[in-house]
Image 1 (spheres, helix red, strand yellow):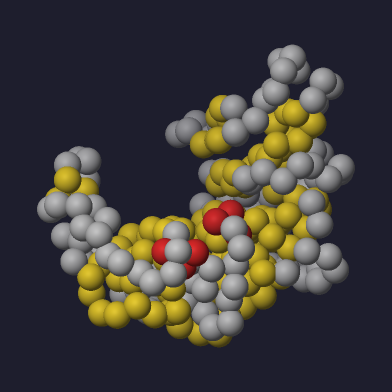
Image 2 (cartoon, rainbow, N blue to C red):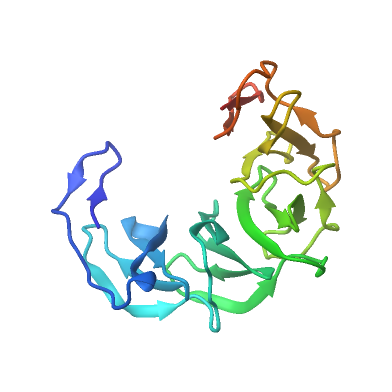
Length: 239
């Protein structure tokens, strides 16, 4: 573990912390807390440890949620929300999540985010939206699905099916737009093989566009996508 200041300069030396169990020691996510502290979350059981700004452990190891057994790194996503809270979501047959306050303390009950319970729900991603709501997207039996929630985790609409045809599993990319909506991109297919596909979801939690192909060049493989919105409200996608 090593901390850096806002300019990218190291703060203190690199520190190592031994955690028993090989599978349990795989670091999953890091999220910033108030006053420069940060939270480390790792392992198939979602263990967590809070650290001070200089990398010193603060308190003991604790569980984000009981009875969790994840098999893959991609089954967990953690994001700091604009008000300083953290939301952690994970896939374990269904999509679950829990809020963590700005001091690094989990609160409230573990929530289930998916309404459709048929099949396997996995590989979730979170995105805070410009209007204060939260978007969560995931794979539902291979189909890209999304849902919009209030900042307290209350669903504001149904599960939305974004992909027409089941794509190959890949990391989803969620980009918030200035109007409170979002664009979801994923690895799908184009005319010759793998391509990058996307769909727009409105601030009201409705489908705002048909599924569309992002790349115009279809020769070879287009994948490993990322996207961001600029100050003009344009979403820029790279792959």
